[in-house]
Length: 394
Image (tube, rainbow, N blue to C red; front, top):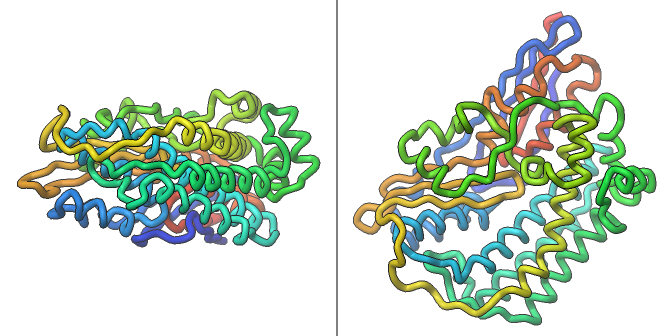
C-alpha cells in the first residue's frame, strides 16, 4: 500500500522526498529515505552579488525571505560589509515569513488530515499582512540587498500590518490564549474550537503521541561560520550534513525544546508527533507575540557603503526558517559568485539515518501506519513534495 502527501504548496524548483517502508511480521523492518533536489546553488554561480540577490527569491519561492537573508549574509561576509543596523528589520521579515509558513501547515494541511475544509481565506489575510511589512520598512523594497537598503519605517503602516498578522494568527489558530503548559493544552484540545486544537487532540491519543520518537539530537543554533567552515571544505556537506559526526533534527522542536509545554510532552512521550506539533504551536504563539516588540525597536538606517572587516572573498550566512536552520556559503572572484553551497533543513530532517528514518524504524505495521507516517513527514516538514510507499513482505 502507499500514500502520498504534500509537504509544501509550491517551490521555485521541483524536488521530492521519497520514503519507502518495508514491513514484515507486523513491524517496519527497513526504511529508505531519498531526497531529490536540483542544485539550485549552481544557478547563482557566475552572477554579480546584485544579480544573485534578485535571483534567490525566484529560485526559492517557499522561503524566499529566509533564503535571501542567508544569501545576503554570506555576500556581506565575503564583501566585508557590516549590516548590523539592519539586523532588527531583517529579523522582523524573517519572523513574518516563518509565521505564515507555520500558518500554511496549520490552516491548510492540518484540517485536511482531519477530513475538514482547509482555510485559504484566513491564510490569504495573514499573507497580505506579512507582505505589507517589507514596504513599511523599506519604501524602495531594497532591504534584502548587500549592505541593506534605506530603512525608513512607516510606523503606522508597520503597526497595522503587525497587528493584523498577530491578531489573525491568534484568532485562526488558537481562538483563545495559546496554551502555555500541558494542563492548558488539555483544556484547549477538549474545547476544540479550531482545527489546530482538534488535530492536537488526535496527536495526544495513545499510539500517536510518541510515534516517531527517536534519539536523534537537536541541531544546535550554530553560527553561520560553523556551517561555512564545513561547506567550504566539503561540498557533500550540503547533501549529507552531520553534527559531531552524527545526524541531527532542526525546526520548531529543536528550537522550542525548553518551552514548558514542549518539555512536558518530550518527557512524557519523547520526540514524537505530540511534541513536534506542540513545538510548532508554541513557536507560532511566540512569533505572534514577538512581532510587535521587534517593530518597536526599529531605527532608521542607510545602506552600508564600504568594507567593515570580515573575510574578503568568501563568506557564510545563516537564517532560521519555519522548517529549521538554513545556511549558505559562497566564494567571490572578480566580483562574481564563483562557488555557492547551501545546506537546508530538509537535508537534516530527511537524512538517510536522520529523525524520520530512525523514527519510523521498528514501527507497528498496521492499517494506521500510512496515516502516522504521513503525519511524521509533515511534522518534519520537507520543502518539497513527499511520497510514502509501504511494502508488506507478508
